Image (cartoon, rainbow, N blue to C red):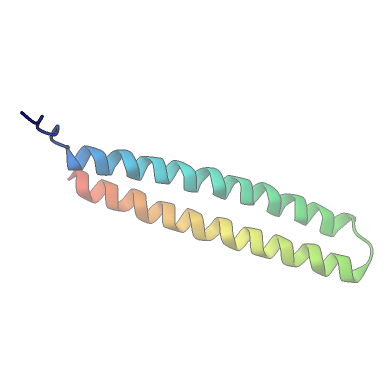
Length: 85
């Protein structure tokens, strides 16, 4: 006789996975913020205009990526709150 699979609590499973994803987004956004800060520091310390432009662009890219992740994280957290109601 075959065993019946254990029923899955979909709401709990969704909440667990959403929390995992949110934690990953938060961690990655933090790493991008750190990299953006280092690039900004290098802009201040670099004398050559070409390298300053390089570090400035790196700063912009990392900052934009972190902002996008943080925006998405807020959306995820907002949808979790709506599901909990």
